[in-house]
Image (cartoon, rainbow, N blue to C red):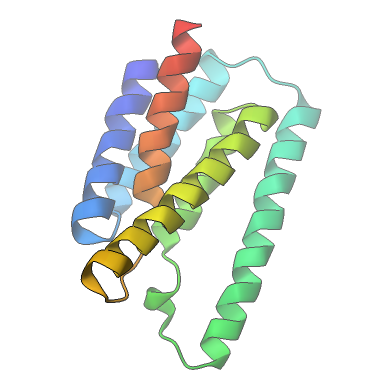
Amino acid sequence: MLILLTLSALPLAYTDFKYRYVHLWGIISFLIASLGYFFLERPVSILELGLSYGTIAFVSLLALGITYFKLKKRYALKEIAGCGDLLFFVATPLILPLESLLVFLILACTAGIAHYLFVHWLYSRTITIPLAGWGALLLICFLHIRHLW
């Protein structure tokens, strides 16, 4: 199951870094692999799953607030956040326990911000952040490190 998750996350990272969008088939395959991992590999309580999705809901509400204020300033929606990023982060509570999920969210956002700052400093232009790409790469690392221990 770990191989299937890795094989479904790698195309997400590749397309997000290269083209700055995520294909729908990639998200669907990742969601299916996440559900398979959840039902076959990960013992979880309903309380833990509820807390994980509560965390994602809180982060999503913060993102919606930011999106609202950006739209109020007349930014285009595709310049703010992509649905691929959101759907990717909706699937992650099925894979990671709550403690790992919080660390994962912080690291993925930190990697995305560092990527943005580095490219902005290097090229002096504004770019979009490949958040699903960084999330997919970090998720692969998380899963393989956890599997080794």
